[in-house]
Amino acid sequence: MHDIRAYDQYFQIGMRHFESGQRAQGASIYFVDDPTHPIQARSVRGLLLLGPLRPGAYLLDRVGLERTLIETSSREGVQLIQEPVTCRPGQAGTSRIVFVVEPRRVTYVGQMLAKGFLASPELESGFVPPDQSAPVQKNIIRVRLVADDRAWTIDCDREIGNEIRAWENVLVKLRETPWSGPIGERLEFLRQASP
Image 1 (spheres, rainbow, N blue to C red):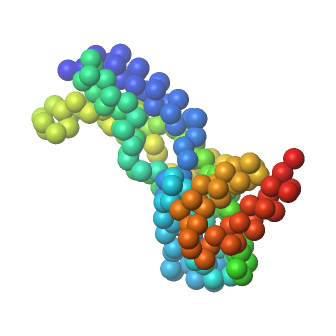
Image 2: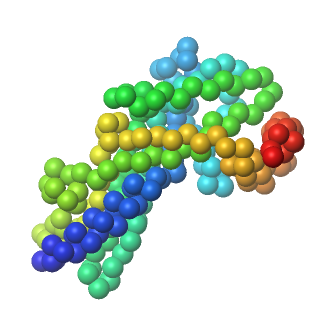
Image 3: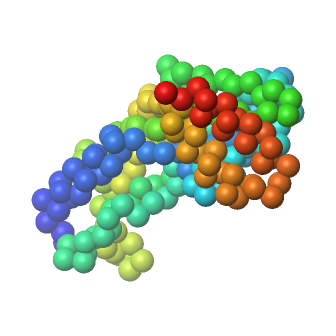
């Protein structure tokens, strides 16, 4: 049986992890006139890309975090794991995020950071204790971030420097595609606008 002080220690690590804000690892959007067909983002060099998209207005439907190993302690024999969680902007007081796609242009939605808090029905500290009867689960402390929009804030940072770095990063992967032209044009515009 683990010392409860170990749970408190890992709870503090988990709190710092979640309160610092996590970059979105998954997202989906939908065309405003067609909410029944969500479009999933794909990851390219650590960024989320959507498209090609037809011109028009889109709503951010979901933002997600994947299952992530935060920390392992061989001394305590525990692992701190973030379970997958999804947030739906526009519910329970969170802001809706809408963006417009123009013909033959690329659009930067922003750098999305999600913040939340830890909670669990099993323990007030936010941890699910190791299941001593199941060998696979024996030495794992599972950390859960509440999958409830009321537990989230989403910051969508549209700072020019972040957008420039994002397009430079994407361009490495898309240099030999038809998207290199619109991305290059956007980069040139941003560099001229940047102080």
